[in-house]
Length: 371
Image (cartoon, rainbow, N blue to C red; front, top):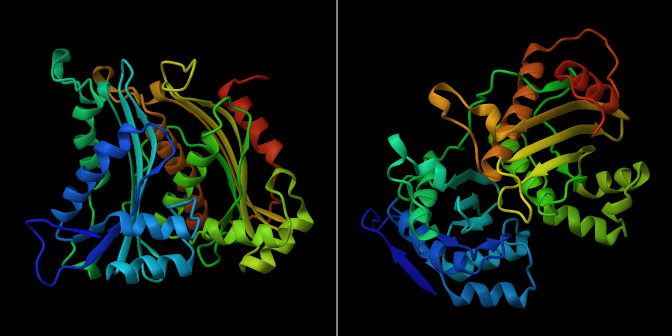
């Protein structure tokens, strides 16, 4: 077990476990470059940071495949072995050395009870580092990584003042709202279970990225999201396949996980510049529906379609060139519709529209036709 103590750490500083990277990107160089940068940056925030082979051995013994969401028993074992009070998980979605080098990361800090105390998402490309007249661009991943880590850990809580933690909540920042319906009964009191999304794009990894980003931003907005590990275990015990889940299956799952609210949807388009045959600009067309399976009602439905160039502003600045950053923006816009409609509490008595009706209206409003 290795313990890092930065210059800001004190005798009363809390200890956290920095988990091995959940490297969705598959790029092995990320395993070499990112962990030391992360450990140093967290230690500089006043934490003692525990990492090392002991933790990896424990995870291997338990056959843990998903590092970002741990079951209660595994989490307690990890914390006890390190004498720590919190766990920091890092997921690497993009780590690509292309003409426009790209890094996309998420971070999640959980306490001993499994509650998310802080989370954030960061996406950075070489183009994002370019200064006036094209100077200063960081073209290599080694140059880009420290800045990406700094972005990711912006707002990370102090290790000696852990009682003052706060979620990193992004602001909605797009002039055109996503088309949506929100039921007056939608609130924050009941947990939400996120199901794997249907994926009509050519990028298999889009399903994981979209679900993870939505989960983090929903939690930051005040919703409770069921641990995916609990959902997977419940589905396995009930012999339910997410590839062909039906209404009766969801009712069975609702009893097992303690909530009737299921978030599901479809990814119609996901363009990633670093994917094979990727487009120059990221794009995401996403439909999300929250269903109360016991009541048989749609509580929330949103359809959002964005490209990175949609955010181009003054002096042609602001365009998004990283798929993780775009997914984060879209998730923020989607979740904003739930907060806005819930706050308005429009008790009009109108019936919830079908998902297809929501999408059809979006095509009429944006001029889109059949794909």
